[in-house]
Amino acid sequence: MCGIMGYVGSEPAVDIVLAGLKRLEYRGYDSAGLGIVDDGRLAICKTPGRVKALADDVAKCWAPELRQRALAGIGHTRWATHGAPTRENAHPHLDAKGRLCLVHNGIIENFQALRARLEQEGHSFLSQTDTEVLAHLIGEFYEGDLLRAVCAALKHVEGAFGIAVLAAGKPDEIVVARRGSPIVLGLCETGALVASDAAAIMSLTRNLVYLEDHDVAVVHPGGIDVRSVDNVPVSRPVTVADWDTTAAEKGGYAHFMLKEIFEQPEALTNTLRGRLDPREGTAVLGGLDMTPREINEISRLVLLACGTSLHACQVAAYAFEELADLPVCVEQAAEFRYRNPIVRSTDLVVAVSQSGETADTLAAVREAQRKGARVASICNVVGSSIARESGRGVYLHAGPEIGVASTKAFTCQVLALSMMALKFGRCRRLTREQGLACCQAYEALPGVVRQVLEQHEAVRAIAGEIARANHVFYIGRGTLHPAAMEGALKLKEISYIHAEGYQAAELKHGPIALLQPDVPVVALANDPRSLDKTLGNMQECRARQAPVYAVVAAGETAANAVATRVLEVPRQPPLLASIPAAIVVQLLAYYAALARGCEIDQPRNLAKSVTVE
Ligand code: F6R
Image (tube, rainbow, N blue to C red; front, side, top):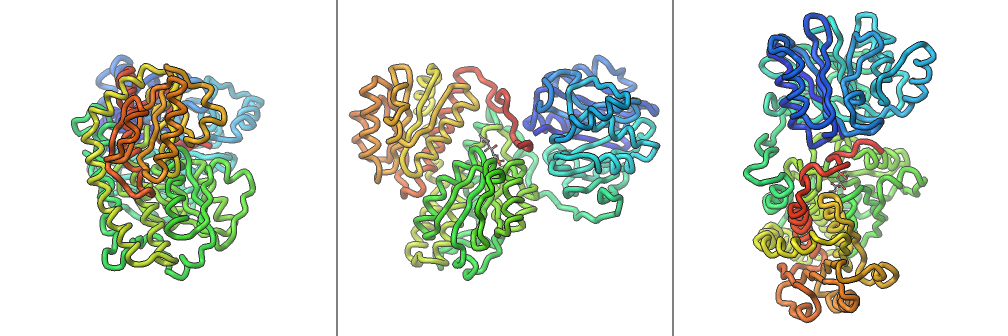
């Protein structure tokens, strides 16, 4: 949710930490702060607003000599959870005696009880945050050994956190800890780095050490000492990052979202790479680590996810039922954990998450594991918590997704899940010929997406009309129903236009009451199997004078007489119709937001990775 960056070494820390924070801004951006050790004292600078505002404040408040002298610093870019995005609530927070400062991602669940206890003991707090309470708690245990104080304090803490702590008089160490919120460490030529996300430090090092839950570590200029919270040394492997940092930059596009929409042909190619077996008509998904017999014994599939990833699961449910003859249950991860779900040992639970850090999905994975289910995951971020904890799964290899609105992850998730459905199908009831047809359709997807992208100007023209509306409906049937919900989600989150995604027939069971000339309907009707029925629903909308923008499969002319405008996309097998439809709705949302002058990559109130429940 928020971003943490830290550096300790032989170079001025301020610029390194600010540069890292800038790269993390997509994770949280309502306030930011920086803490450094200078001449045995702590200096803190915090500001509401973006990292640029923090950099300006730093330049104003700290003399150039001070900025050059300080060789250790920690910084934070915040997405508010406790308390408004003000200077007081921004991190770092100091302990009561001002001897240490702390930045924190996550939520301390028992902070109110801790705060009340500390207040009784005479502490007073400057902010509403749970983080300041943790800083004070660590301060209570601090007698010169920072690691020991952090370990002692964390024993009293409930909740999720990734933290970095800097102490006055300790210019050559940062102490970090992780429980539920990622922390990655790295050594570079001039010192050591701390971050909540590898993207922050990859321009300086590619050798990364990921902390596990309950790890603490002391980070020195020349080394990293990882321990358990009981202060016992533990060893964590060095992972060499293999993705390109330029992939995390905009590459000439106006926004990350647009870049990510347009790189979908390449992302899908990467998801496919080496995973189709054209001789046997199946998919090769080694990371699943399941024998054909084990796959055959699965009695039910449970798909867990949130948001866009949930929509990808809802699309894929059709493929698992149709190709693999498997009952599928798609679960909103946030509900799964709390309603005592029935899980059998023959169930396979698959968690789907772009970031691999979504707290609700991670909690659901743990609940499924507690109940004895076999769990796998589909994640994009390699080494993320969900990927590691599920232990088996499929990576998307879609490259970093920086735009807050998820785009390429959706299409790659649908593809990865479809390949899983093919593999399961071939272990259960699909013939080789049927499998080969699937392989061919999957292989053709990057080209299909390219063709839809070529029509971006036509989509932009429709978006110009939609941008004037206050309410928009998206409708679809079959796999195009979740695609419609995805379209509505995209429009809402970046253009702030109220939108609803409905199963097309469902509209007349109530929501049709809202239709009028200024409420457009986007009809996803590019599955010829259900076109006739959707045409009927479009007629119902037109009868209420609502403009209807229809997406149909190439060559289908029937919609021309009904819709206000028609967009043709390449014809696909019904199970894959959501892919061209998704590209259209992503472009629609993007161009509508652009027309309304919205902040597309960093929409209000949203953060890229939702690591709180
Ligand atoms: C919408 C969006 C969110 C995420 C959701 C799950 O554009 O990005 O709805 O899809 O927060 O995130 P992941 O996939 O990282 O678990």
